[in-house]
Length: 430
Image (cartoon, rainbow, N blue to C red):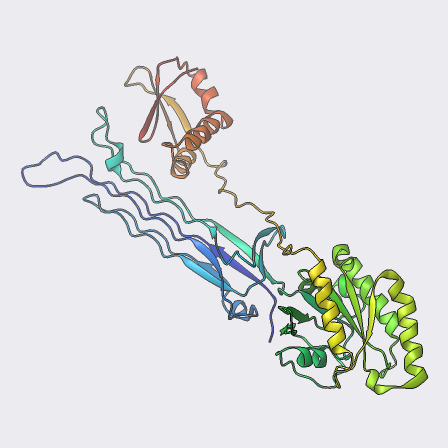
């Protein structure tokens, strides 16, 4: 069964906690802190596998979690880093955030490997918190938690040309004649379910990639049948070939068929409907003489004034196919080389810990010392690198936005006093 859409849950690894321990050796009764740092959590990575062409594997495995970092140990031992999780996807896969539908990344063309969720940093051991006034710190930094998301994977095939048309008009036969693709062919009265890709090789040119988009039906843009699943594969194509049954072997009107498909394309995405089009009037081996000329004349009078060329062809005998393909290549050469890539819309957010409590107190034992503690403070410190300029700017905003500065002022803090947050101490300045 071909699958071109899947919903999965992904998570990066949690950083290991820093360790609290003290050096204990013979003849060293009062050794200093020697707690090691926690290991870093594993990253969640998406990687393109050119050998894949469906999302079938994601029907069976729905959760992809990176490994957690190990906690630090005594004697300054660093915890082991968590293992990365590499998720293999076919080229052309778009990763979207499930609740908003916004694009996280497009795994196409040069973007063959991307870290989607970074693993949490490991916490610092208590060895880092020793100061002249605090020589036996009994706390360490917790590891930074990983990030978890539910995402939707959508496969949008990468092809220069999209072959569209109603079911049973000869698209699969045409594709098997002009490429090395081998789709199943029969006189089905229902549509092919799998988009088929093939490379067209033309003498004197570098050829192009063509995709047989499964047969569309009216209402496809509204999700009727498998409409959305089929239409998404047209989004990267630069030229569309409309194939119609010019002989009306099943009683269909080729002009009405083209108009119906264009309405579906317009309703789904007007940009797609505006792309260059070619009409392949197929099955001309099924009728002759005046009848054939009448049908072709009607098609040309209807569509060629709109700049859409009509090519009479037979996918069975090969008549007219060469001319159609060379004209298609000319159109591609005239179009800009821009690759259709879906821009990133969703930015990975850091977890929100605004609901967690904290306390701001004035020390009763030491003059001019104010202590700020609580889960919210501990989590903020675990997420913030205070040694960097950006990290310190975030810390200052955090203190202000959470009302901590206001509470310190209410407690009577003055310039030059000390603010202590677990292993960090700062001099207060207005």
